[in-house]
Image (cartoon, rainbow, N blue to C red):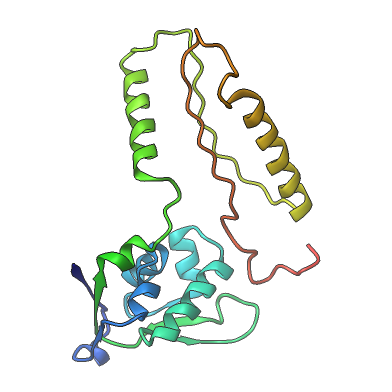
Length: 198
């Protein structure tokens, strides 16, 4: 099974140019952040403008623009460390991409759909007061710059806590059943101006 996605760029000079992608390049374009970049591109934007609009670092935007440029969908112009010096322009007036179901399935999801569904259901039930006022619930979203050694240590300590509380036979059989799902992943690259020593 396949489906078509289409975008039209607001560039008068290329309005009649249509690019149809039905090959492996569709997998590159299936990345949600890359597609969002294309959606806001208009008749062209600097890396800094895209970065500011999407609230991601300029280095991350530049990485995805380079991948998009490899597909022939955009032209990337500029050099140097300044995100104002890099500019992305659409290479066509209209883009049509055929995505197969298998290509969509290859995109790694941060959390499995069934896990997301379970947690959302639990939060709805909490809001309605199902569990009363004595249970514990927490949602944390934290960000920090860590050295690789610090990230590895965090991972080891977190796994130790999980092993202590969550294996079968641990905890209190009379207690409330809790779910824990953790995602620990890099979320952004250094800005273009950052040095390697920082």
